[in-house]
Length: 495
Image 1: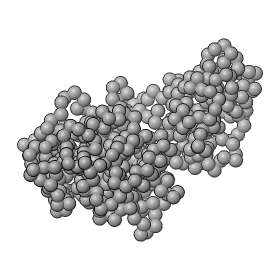
Image 2: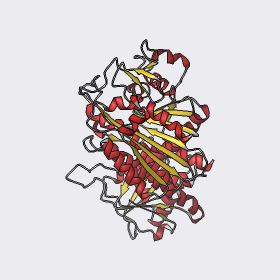
Image 3: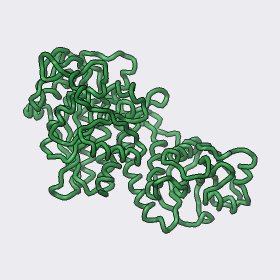
Image 4: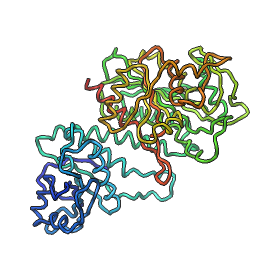
């Protein structure tokens, strides 16, 4: 998609379609009013005959514009005339692009950044247009013989006044970077597990590093992990013929001695459950168990594209979890890199086993904060559904910063408690702790397990089991929480 900014008067605009907003009660946004005047009241006529009332999310495409270089006008309903909430603004953006996807339109101009949105400026509004349109037109075709996509959109321009040009330019740059990070994340996650193996993820990281001078990439092999004592991580990979990898992305653009932000993403490229085998129904979706790792790659890509003045470490423990004669078994005792021993009660609780050694490994970077993200527990989906990601952590300031970033990014999270009482459920008669805590509070006890390996730094955990991908007819990766993490990093860079 080509993106640009258009500051010329509407009468000089040339495009396949312009998107304008209308409120209920036949009230227009400025561009709609101008177009109505330039077309002898065409928009008023459309409204007066009842084709659109202005309710939120309504759309009408006007296909013929007399004596105009603008070939079409897409009207989008905004509801009652008042400043929009951020969510309602994005709802209008999604409505518009979903209507455009059904047409042969190749170039579109959006005037919706002129709409008032509570608490947000032209930079944020521009960024949302780029992110929403890019997200909506993404279509996976890599393993299809037909590479054609439903959407024909190729060019998108943002209509803006000259005096807002600097903000719109900044918003476009941020939006493009985040959108590219989301698309990369979705692409990796949507790939089948026979292509996207731990080795493939490592290769993608190396390729990403080769494109960005400030991003260095290194890979730990199983022999390296063995030397470091990562007994918990390696126990998960034992059942797989695919060698595990620990991928490190080192982005250095901040002050030389500034402590880095460490982001860890679970990279289980396929999770069959191990000896504690999952049921067959829905097991194909376990290729998405690496969405955390994919999101780390997407976030580091976005940070590098934005040239954020920060030091960031991305860590991706990548493995498969398969049943095999050499796979770890319920009842086994593992020794983690930290020296703590773990009793395996369920081999399908493997994500925490690769994450705990990676958390210990993160200490060597002397981090300012550590954030891990993982499709960790089905319990999170039961508790929160597919709207917010779960948030837990040992530092209120970090958690509050992530909550604030989620509001700005419209990438919701909900904080859950991490109370000492829950740690009791992880007690073991045979090891320092068990890898599961029973059926109660599964998301919380999983985080409690991780917290025992995050005692030496400020830490937050994002459980994205309900938000990393969609199921059913719209099955596919969402790219979350790349927008949230990108906004957190932007906030830190501006801090």
